Image (cartoon, rainbow, N blue to C red):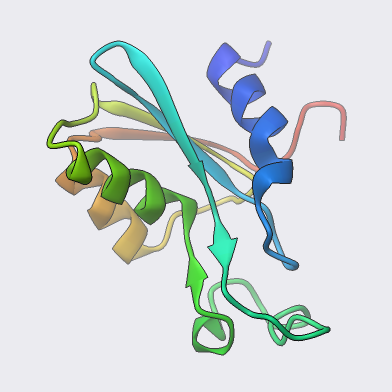
Length: 118
């Protein structure tokens, strides 16, 4: 059984504009579920990272990871996470992303790479 949080995040993946991999991260803030998707500033015809291994070539597209985007929004509001975050679309969180989530109070990160029907 997939949690409601994972289902909500999978439904939001299409909001990402990344040509390589769509991700979404969510957490509760004062009992309200908040989320963010990854975003890329690349404006060319073909993503320069498309054939690169995961975790490499970020400088080619100015990617904004969903974990960092969520943490920045929470910080701007001057609040913090209720402690647990969910990540979909990827199988790991890089160190800068994990640190961003910790900074806003996330103590546990739950990850699911693919929807259950895959």
